[in-house]
Image 1 (cartoon, helix red, strand yellow):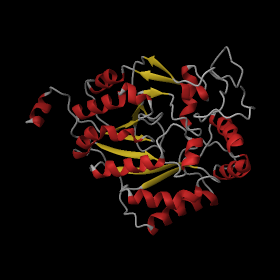
Image 2: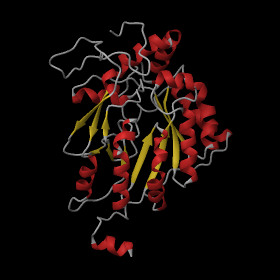
Image 3: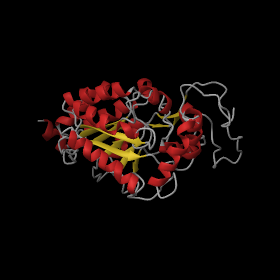
Image 4: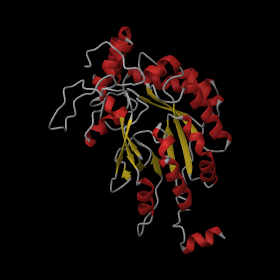
Amino acid sequence: MSNKSTDKIHGRGAQFNPANRFDKFQKDEGFIHEDNTTKFIPTFPKALVNKVESPDIPFMFSMNPYQGCEHGCVYCYARNTHPYWGYSAGLEFEQNILIKKDAPKLLRQYFNKRGYQPNPIMLSGNTDCYQPAEQKFKLTRQLLEICLEYRHPVSLITKNALITRDIDILSKLAIENLTCVVISITTLDEKLRLQLEPRTSTASKRMSAVKELADHNIPVSVMMAPVIPGLTLQEIFPLVKKSLEHKAYDVYYSMLRLNGDVEPIFKDWLQKTYPDKYEKIIHQTEEIHGGSVSDHRFQKRMKGEGTFAENIHLQFKMAKKKYGMPRMRMPVLDCSKFQVPGSQLSLVFDL
């Protein structure tokens, strides 16, 4: 099947596989698996924690127990990392999930380094740490347990209500100001959600997760990511309203941008799913990013620029004012409580 086909692959976001530019032996573009199953592939990297170089991201370090993501969000920027592992950014990103089975051991080694100075770490920053694979492998839960053991600050962002499974650990971290959570919600429209991000939790379940986390005193905000011009703009006010009703600290957002292989994947999906809206969505996205659907510019790529981008910013501002969202910010996590278990400091602290 090629990307020219009009047939939809149900339950998947991408509808074809762009060629992997790193592969010497290129498959024909459009190659897909003969079946629609998900494959879990163990990997054994030498390190888990990555330094984040982008000034647009509000954290310095991240860790990703999984590469690839079965959620299948068609707009996902993380798709562009999958070719480095030898796979396509398209369907293979959703079907070939790499499992870092040694992730807990690697995190312990990282924390145990002589002279280690703690900084908050984000779970995940790339692919979703609560994607369906987590139900089976429980790597995210193990990493949280280690963070609690070492009293190390950790933040999380996810599109999956599975996070509520770990409220027992998160609430203990929150008591010591060691965690905060962002729940990403792109749309409240369930029909659109099924097309756009087919294997994520429903928006209603994610909103319920926001309230459940807040009810356990775990700081939680909502991220509308991405805002898609011509498709989800009308949801800004309703989403802010619901977020406030479900006790979110704040609502953030980022704009759609189609860097690298995400551009042909998203355009193909758009032509097959909303052909009547194709021109409007693409032109408005180009307007936000200086004439291109892609944007690599720090300080501008997340929010865009120009009149249209400013109008979106004002809509969020007006919505928060209309619904009385308090001017609260997520807490700065405490790095001072870090301790290596069994050390003299930990023995004193535990007393």
